[in-house]
Length: 234
Image 1: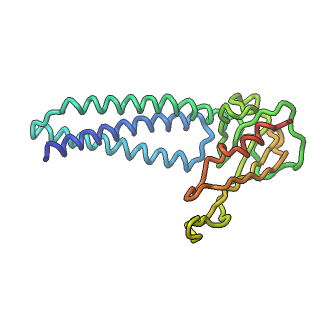
Image 2: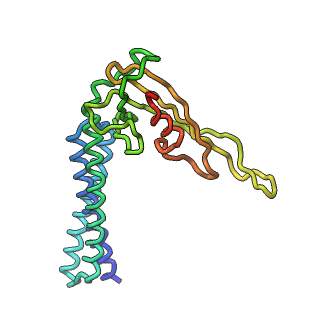
Image 3: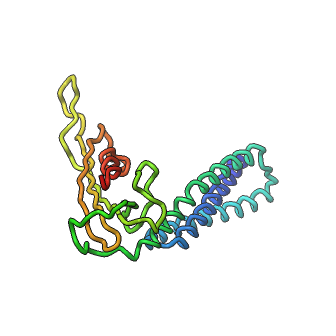
C-alpha cells in the first residue's frame, strides 16, 4: 500500500509541476503583452506559485521516501506522464498565441479608452473593423465575424457588451401541467463605439431563451449578436 501511495504521490507531484510550468509561461506572456488587469495577474501568479510549490515539494518528499524504501518507478508512469506532457504542450501551443494576440491588442488600444462617451449617435466609420472590449481587456474576434480584425492598426470600432440572465416564465410538465423549473432568458447589450474619439455609435439589445436548466450561453455565440455584427455598415 505504501508503494502504491508513493507512486501516486510521484505522479501528482509531476503533474502539478507541469501545470505550474505551463502557467508560468502564460504569466510571462500575459505580463509582457500588457493590458491585463492587475487582479487577473495576481490570481494567475498565486496559482502558478502554488502548483510549482506543490510539485517541487512532492518530488523532494518522494525522493526522500523512495531512497529509504528502494521504490522503483513502474514503466506505466513515464508513459502516462508523457501523454499528459504532450497534451499540455498542445494546450500551450493553442493558448499562448491567443493570449499574446489579445495582450498586444489591449496594449495598443488601451490609451483610447475613456470613462464616458464623448458623444452619442455618431456615424459608423467607413469600412468598419472591430474588436471586442470586456472587463478591461480587448479580444480579437473569431473568424466568423466578417468585420473583425486581429491587426490593431486596422481597428476603428470597438464592441463592448454587458450581459445578464433573468426569469422569463416557467417550464411545466406537459403531462401534469406542474412547474418543473423557472424559464430564463439571456440578455445582452452591445455598445458599438467609434475608437478614435470613444463616441457611441449604437446600442443594441439581444435576447436568447435558454433551454431548461441552462444557466447561460456564450454571449458572442448568440445568433442575434453574430447576425448584427456581421451586418455592420450595411
